[in-house]
Length: 526
Image 1 (spheres, rainbow, N blue to C red):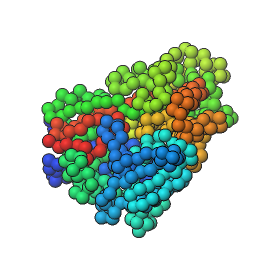
Image 2: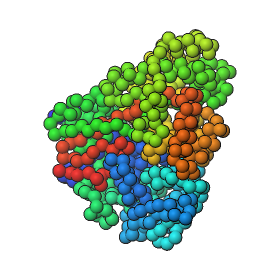
Image 3: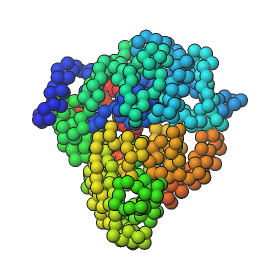
Image 4: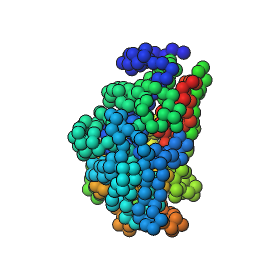
């Protein structure tokens, strides 16, 4: 089946397909990586591209299970549980031939702990990293940290010598608009090497034939041509016409069409990610509403009313075509701390919502701007459009402003939004990750994605205790207690847990990763 695509994208894909062979994987998704600096952004598509080039000490395989990467084994010391010992893989080289050593681990962790890093919340318990010898590293934590390995699966190792030689010791300041050599250049230990990079247009990678894992992974992909295609129809058309081999985000309205096409396959799985709305509830007044001198979102009755107004089942059936799971909390079922009771705690009740609005003094409603991405999550803008109508039923007039994620995310990180969509995956599979980024009082070191203005010192102390509590029953009780407060205070409006739909030609062999992070070294090409 041949379908006409947009001229610019079609021309690009046609030019790349001329050089394609059986081992070339032509990969497309809605949005691009935000940067190639491996520590600058904690964002899914950014990590996914980085995983092809760079490596952490530990990865999660395509099922989500731990697998040794640049570390071969790891464990806390028997006589000192505040020290984790990692034994490093020997004989590993970077793409430029430099040897990977313990000093690179020390450099990379310390770099990722700095202010401009998007990864620093994951490393808050680490007080020191030290090289015992060339292939042994010790992590010293502020108290025993039972889940330290879970925090390292997206923490990529850089060559300290390369970073120094190219003036990239400092992490790129993305929010400040900075670009560095590491923004568009790489030197990793991974299965693929960077050939060329045109942000938002095309990135080409080639297989690293000196990769340490050549005999441990299929390594059947010899070249990757990665093309971001924001427009859903164009993206599907590229798959249907054979111009790309693999797309991560088949639009829900096209699932059957793709699945019924000769030579194509759709694979579906629940994702470790929840989509929700955040509200700037902290200040006395906000900018993007029509209420002077007060903040309607600061009133918990308003937040509860908005939560009741959202019909999650309707979003699932109409917007998502059944491809979502309505959520009552901002953590998916994969995560330690999730409970079915909390996740089913929200029911739609427009009349009760109207009553709460009136009780709060907003019987005539108010208007507010909703900031939404249009190229990051499945049907993100359509979900926001549906919410506009639902919130209107209780008198909240929503002005929707949808934009690409490259412009949307800085609004959240800089505090420039009062009402916004966000999706959150949990690569550690533990609630501490959610709390550290989204619940803890915002500072330069922690709570960096908490744009709500919410601050609770007692809750902060409980969150901090999770990093060093080794009694897992006690730790889980604290997690449950924190969730109880988060739910009662209605910090966020959960929408749904996302479902992944990967589309590919029959020649591509892979299973769907719950992290939505295909690692091409696992792929087979038939």
